[in-house]
Image 1 (cartoon, helix red, strand yellow):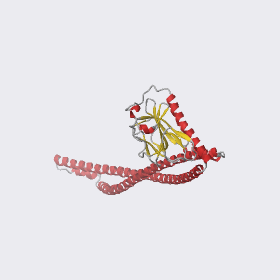
Image 2 (cartoon, rainbow, N blue to C red):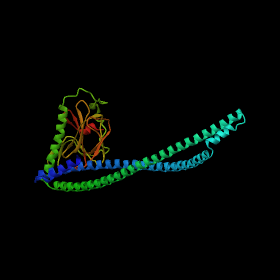
Image 3 (cartoon, rainbow, N blue to C red):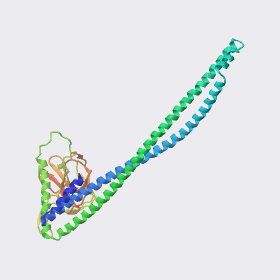
Image 4 (cartoon, rainbow, N blue to C red):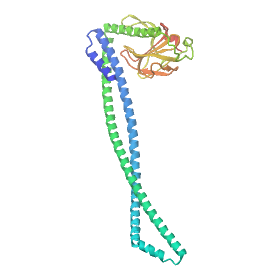
Length: 377
């Protein structure tokens, strides 16, 4: 699915029209492709780890089966030796029985001196018969044990063969995943270089820079549109969560969404140093580095997760009573729509975009933008 989306974007980049809008669109498409490529690399890493776990399990299983085979083989050698010895003894006894036929046993009984002697001789013959029967039963039992031992050895060896084949298959899969991951990482490095060149070109051209600022304005409007759309929904009749403290009581008390607290762009009117144009920032932009964790500032409901041009992955939390917070320019996201977050819970980590890796954060009260710095501690 991710790879298919990457291919669609690559085809779109190939068909991008010329001109400044085409260059801006190409930059945004590359941003999106980089985000998808990162997700693909992470998925390959997850699959590689799962494959490694399966290999460790198979290796352990093979070791167990090999130990069983050694144990069963030794037991079988002992059982077969005992069986051979029993066969010799039983054979000797059968030979002895043939030497002393039924006629001899009858002569033994008839030669009794009296009834007491006869009784003793009968008891002796019965004891001999029981002894012979025990020998034969023991021989039959030992034959069964040897047969079962041989079958058990065959079964374990078959299992070992299957596990060894499974191990080979898993090794091939692991190698394919490693090679695919390396290939995707190489593509990712190339796309980052391509994006950097485009961004440098845009930064050195006032027309392109103006077009990029206009695109950023449209992206910010899309965030606003999402907030209005969420606020315009009918409230659900099913209450799935309640804030610990009313959000309006948290002004000036919210923890920062980043460990770093350096503001790059403040809330409100921003004058561009090169173009001299003024834009409205509906939130604040904080200095960040790729991989920095992003935290929820309060207990909230994950209302929307989306991808926006110029802002990448964006998460919107609802905090009740029409209050919302927006977290933009994320690479990885650790929450899902519908989930209820705790204060200071990690919800994602910082990614990169054509505008750098700075983190964008907004606070809304119904459809009104709020200055986040007034809400943060």
